[in-house]
Image (cartoon, rainbow, N blue to C red; front, top):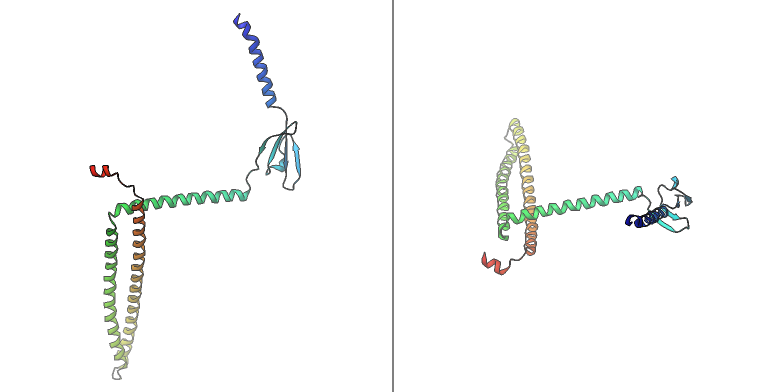
Length: 219
C-alpha cells in the first residue's frame, strides 16, 4: 500500500526533473562581433569571432552568459612579463632573506662589523705601503740610469743597455702605480660594503622581536 501511494509522487518528481533539464537545455543563440565590427548570430560561435567575446542569448533575447574573448598576443606577452617580474621579485626577496640570515649569524654586535672592516682595510693598506716602497726604489734607480745616459763618457753599447733598463723600469713603475690605484678602489668598495652591512644590521636588529621581560629574567 505504501509503495502504491509513493509511486505517483515518484513519477511526478521524475517528470518535474525532466522538465527542468529540458528547460536548462532550451535552444540558445550566440552572437559575437568580428574584428571588422560585423555582428554574427547563430547556434554556435562563428569562426570569425574566434578572437572575440561571445554572448549567449535565450530564445527571448535575454543574456544567459558571456564568454570572454581569449587573450590577445599582446595580453599574453604582458601576462608573461608580469609573471617573470613576480618571479624575479620573489627571487630577490629570497636572496635578501638569505643574506639577512647570514648577516645576523656572522656578527653578534655592531663592533664586530667595524672590527672586520678595519682589519681588512689595514691589510690592503699594508700592501699599498709595500708597493709604494718598491716604487720609491724603482724611481730612484731610474733617476740614476737617466743620469748615466746623459754622461758623455758612457760608451754607446752601455748607453743602449741603460736605455733598455730605463724602459723596463718605467713599465714596472706603471704596473705598481696601477696596482696601488686598484687597491685604493678596493678599499673604498670595502668601506661602502661594510657601511651597507652595518646599516642593514641595525635595521634588522630594530625589527627583531623584543623578549618578554619575565622570559628574559628566567634565561
